[in-house]
Length: 518
Image (cartoon, one colour):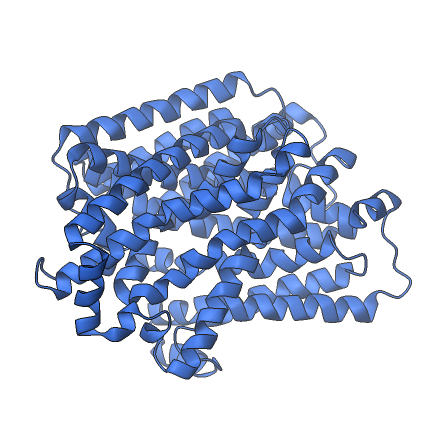
């Protein structure tokens, strides 16, 4: 769970005004989305009505989410310039996702009328097992992401409105549920759009205020170098120099290639109004991500330099670097804007997860068992009910168990990257990919991720520290080397290897051959 408890409560009318205005906008968008939702297609993929800028900014915002305001500055504060490996490479992920999947997924949505990732993978591999495993992985990942996002949301609500944490949790969850269940993805993409514009604007202001606070980039770098030269080196804060290069490369792989495995991103391609508007989506999304990352870069470095220079006391937690900076070192208008952006980031990303998770429960899992819901209106209502159930379940997890939130927090980006990048990228670009290869890739990637990430946390929570130490001792790489990268590489190897071994005599449906050869 993100330790945001130390965030001070904002005592400024601008912060309250911006936060309240954002919540009213969200509810208004939800009502508007409800009035424009007539089918499951509208609810899940906006009826293929999204234009270039909205698609690109929505794609950027669901990837950046609250990480850009909390996790990103935390990394830069802790590791200096080393943490920028993620932010320098993540924009490349949009290009990879667009090149490998954008056109193919959009065409697939037309020729087979698919609405979810599991729909598309079932069409490609013609396997109920592939559909079922895809849906199961989506549901597990969605619950994990929702729990961690709601855990952060409760403290952000407290910081903005000064309310008790428990009110922030249940109030934030209720608002999230209301606009998600009412408007579906139609409401979600426009909320994402509002969030992305807010975050980009706030990032630009924060960047200049942070430079001024730190005395300029030269002074910031001098303060950091005087304490630890590694803080201004691209590899210096990652431990052993020889290993740091490989660790940086591993982060590069995970956050660039892994982007094309994030279901909340790649299913956005189904929503495109037509193929032409996909052309400029990648550069718009990449540039937007780079601009918004100035929050992490500037706030993280300036706060660490100020601490090391004795200007401010040491922070209780690195994760509060950006919130504390914004609340204490920027005018109320800027603080209100940026905190509203953080609130928007958490809620809009949660909405995307809710939609793909609800669709997995109402559409994909029943179809994997051969029990599809044939009436479209019934399917829509079941999807909305599943969305409500996921929200309630994740809220109760946060309310009753910090330990469980922490365990679920280990299931994140790397979990989705390993499960879905080989499945989708190879499946839609290589005729030789087989259902056996897809199944092996999904299972192998998930096992590696869960074994090295979740099992140690479960063992610690259960008081079995010996089990945790044993599992971690089996990890063949240095501390800091991301488990998600290993899981992703294992999944890629299994998908390719098993597909080659089982592809004799296999054929691809005729209408998909043309798609794969584009």
